[in-house]
Figure 1 (cartoon, rainbow, N blue to C red):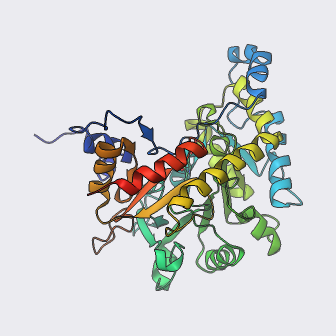
Figure 2: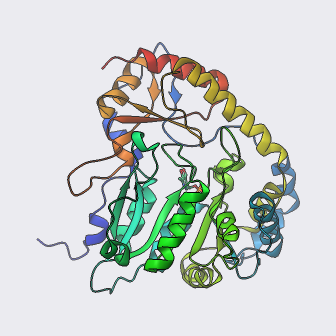
Amino acid sequence: MMDKHAQPLLNQLGDYPFERLKKLFQHSSPNPELLHIDAGAGEPRLPLPSFVQDTLNEHIQGFSKYPATRGNADLQRSIVRWLKHRFHLQQLDMRTQVLTANGTREALFAIAHTLVNPEAKQKPYVMMPNPMYQIYYGAAVTAGAEPYLLHCLADDGFEPCLDDIDAKTWERTAFMYVCSPSNPTGWIAKHDYYARLLELADQYDFYIVADECYSEIYTDEPPIGLLEVAQQLGRNDFSRCLVMNSLSKRSALPGLRSGLIAGDATLIARFAKLRSYTGPGTPLPLQAVAAKAWSDEEHVTQHLDVYRNSLRAFFDVWSEAHQPEGSFFVWLPVDDDEAFAKAAYEQQAVTVLPGSYLGANDAQGCNAGAGYIRAALVDGEDKAAELAVRLKKVRV
Ligand SMILES: Cc1ncc(COP(=O)(O)O)c(C=O)c1O
């Protein structure tokens, strides 16, 4: 019998990567002689910054009030101060160019439902890197768009490839997700890449959504941001640009669920309208913690040291492998990514994610994530070194 509740767009999506991983491991168990290392999820596991507890206690009464969807003024001010300082911005208006979100995940998803016209004669394209943070794909599909995959290949330094895209394709594009630093490849967008995108965006009338939530985790210099490039090009209104950032990675507070959206005031206004229906405000005590976290750099510098030391320890062992420019992920080539992940779990009690779970098939059936595994270095230097040694021993 036909299921009258079937949602055809949702049905186009496969299981989320961590569900697939559970299925892959359902008949396996980790080597009982070793302590398990979970490098599967990108969840920072560093000590809580010291201000969290006190700030929460001080603002605990805030749980008895409904928070406004846009965030309160203290948090907005603190976000604007951080963005201006970090990206050398001269102007950014907290009332019209900034919104808060319960983490960037919901915002990255909801933005597709703001920028895609589901009634367009031809399905609009949403461009995205392949492999990608899977939310982009799910958002595009459920908003009624067609994901357009930009392959990120080792030979190009994992830069999402913009070659060979014809004018018709660009004209159909509603917006593009850029992830810099990239999960999972560690690529970072440079000035010229963002500048080229802005030129194309003007020429073909589309928007750029930059997911910069790993911006504070890098091996060399702090990555440039989309808003910074826009300003350098004289686009002081940040037209066509939205950036998302988060305290989950920067402050190792993924459970706080606090992020920001900033950029083009027209887009912000449209997004704020959607969020006034779908996005609950962040609880006030959590907003107070978030305001503190955006205002403190000391804990961020400490975290960065830990990530850099972890990467160094890992690549001391894997010196031949590609090193990420940013993020805490390593992206290692293997023959068969599912078989490798299973063997790593059974032989070495290590959880890593098969790269194909982070990619999608293009029209030719090519998944740019296949043949890689992703490991997150989120447990400090010693575990990173141990992880590297164990991964070397895996035999498929
Ligand atoms: C690339 C990328 N963007 C966004 C997020 C979402 O982070 P949050 O919702 O915690 O801000 C993640 C989380 O893993 C991520 O890897």
